[in-house]
Length: 412
Image (tube, rainbow, N blue to C red; front, side, top):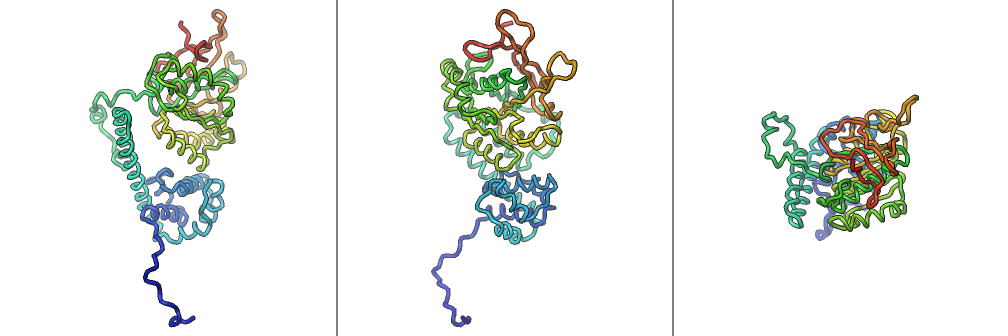
């Protein structure tokens, strides 16, 4: 067919839809990374995986960054080969190739990344406004809003400069108050790592902390407190084991607390996990988005990755992911196994088994140990600090098997 023989274009045909600027910016970021991996460092300084509105692109971003960290080659072919492992669907080799080809210039990757970050901040502001208009507790909503706006301000670069000591101290007394999740024990963004020997009851103690807190009952002093929302990600136990373990405790907590904890504790049992994988991280962040927990119980540590955490290099990616979860404004409870007994030692070392990096990570490191001396007929257990507290807390020093709840503090 010659040009003269071609039919004229229909002037009433709808034009093909074009992606909006936000979607283009996200694709340009990925395309620039594929076109020139040297720009990835500049992009990482501007955005995180959570900034991408298209969660598939966020997973690709996180996966490519991991490939660079592991010194793997990065191009659209090697990345395409990883999409299934990252749980990315609906994107094929041709799509990745076209994104790399469409980027005007990879030198502008940081600029595209800033556009993605700014769009993410606008969505966050819209979400904050929506929560304010539907809040049942205005006082708590105001506090949460100020906290969220402060974090957004840092994301926008407003807090990039160091403050003078005078500015640091010149704040209202209300800003210095503790933002308690469990009064006297855990503040928002605190991390508690609990260790102990196998079968010592550390899992039950952590469940008690979670369920009683959700009920509005202090988990070691048993007076009423402000109830909190709880998310549990259990990498070791099944749903049936949870049902058998916590039924009685939940009934007691509902009776003595400020509310029935059942609707406010959400449990995901996932025995096979690798939280360093972008797809697994995405699932956890989506659970946090859905349930908005104040307290996150996750672990045990050795089940969060399929390999032993023996060195600082093994620990670094795991702790980085956990810190990313903590930045969502939750207090974190995590269980770890204690180290093995050394030759000639009278007591088993309660420090977490594996990399020394684990010792300095949490705000509070406690170990549960059965006491050798038995006072009366009931054995007691000590909560031993295997690292110094970063702030003053009122953890009980000794516990015993309780009547109303599995663990109660000793009177002496």
